[in-house]
Length: 233
Length: 374
Image 1 (cartoon, chains in turn brown, green):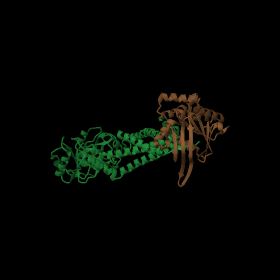
Image 2 (image 1 turned 135 degrees about the horizontal axis):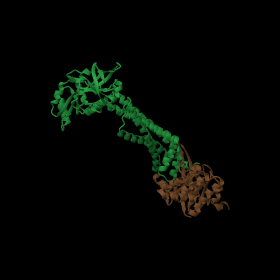
Image 3 (image 1 turned 90 degrees about the vertical axis):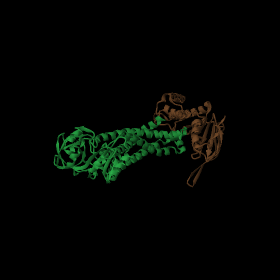
Image 4 (image 1 turned 30 degrees about the vertical axis):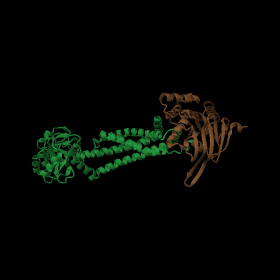
């Protein structure tokens, strides 16, 4: 499988006054297209920092992150939005939908950022909602959707820009078992059928069965990388 | 994006109401204070501005129209003899005492002019004719002040400085800054209604012949006439307005109130837009994660500020116009010409956009990790 994200010698140190805390300490990691990669580890281990840097919304202290052949750590601040827009889709634990927009408008907003407008944007947004089995919820506001439905809208929105990479932060944490499995099946489908690189930060052991690789992080370091089969051999 | 900005704005109706209240309050306050200022400046100098003269010849050092020091009428003949002078007339502006029918003495401002010429004549004549003032003992007053003066009808006989006068006409909308009503009459009559001596005048009004260089004419007039100032109508108007507005502090007070109104508006709007931005900060973070540029987020916040400004201005200016209309029948004279209304719209936009700047700074320096918090 081709490498979608190549992380090398990545460090991140947060400083506040005279205090410095190292969140990442020399992380090396390859994320492959067509696979679901789980990032697991205890709270404060550096998972969110790693996914933030891979998502081009946080700069590392040192090291490199290559996406589509470019080291994004060397890009200027104003070049990073284009990386996020063209290569990355985010799925958040809290869904992060816009409460004043309907489901279809939430997805359309992501398309508008890619300069897709008008009837084309509306048609594509509906098609994306159809793909996540929400054809009957186009005009529902987030407040009127269940947790699972909200997360499916969020997935549809994340896919609007046709990204190579989907970064999901605890996507099942706020969902019941059935909804969580539905969401994970969709993310698994994205990797295996659409060839996307899917990275999931999670504490939820229920999602392990959907993983192709599991990356364990402790104290800012990758402590173990294992194939699902290896884990359960 | 447009819908997100507007939807967010209208989502919290209480906050929107607070924002709009702040803007409306500011617009009304600034409009009324500006209108009062303009009303003051108009009323302080309206007699000068509407005189039709090119030059006002005054005693030396006269600061404003109400305090003209009388000088010899011989200067009139000297002025008329100057080449380039088409017309020169004596003109009296002097406080007098009007006897109200109930016996009270009221201060009034007697304007004495030559009814055979248009120089210094009343304007906005609503009833009667300027020619009627050629008759002895005749005066014209403004309808607004008629109740104050106890005038109920044309032909009514009144008393000014112990002399008989008959009201032969009404003007409409000629207000006075000093609150002493203007009383237009002929120069000859004015001599009896004021303490000006028969061989004196308060001012000379000069009309230049067509094509004459005004600066050259002014220099010649100054050369021929001793101990006088020769001011263009605009200069004397500006001097009079400046005295009343800034010499007395009246204008400064009004300007200060307008500035305070603006500041209050900025603070209220800044506070509410900032609070709204904080409420939606997670959404801005999500937008950034989705690939939105800072410019895109600026536009959302600015659009909210602009929509707030337009709505607040529309209501605020409507209220201000209502105040302006009602002022026509009250003691305060508020003037809001289209240029001021347009300027105020620009000011409101600027106020709201300035207020939004604080929020823009907040929204574009979001901690990126916050979007990952559950």
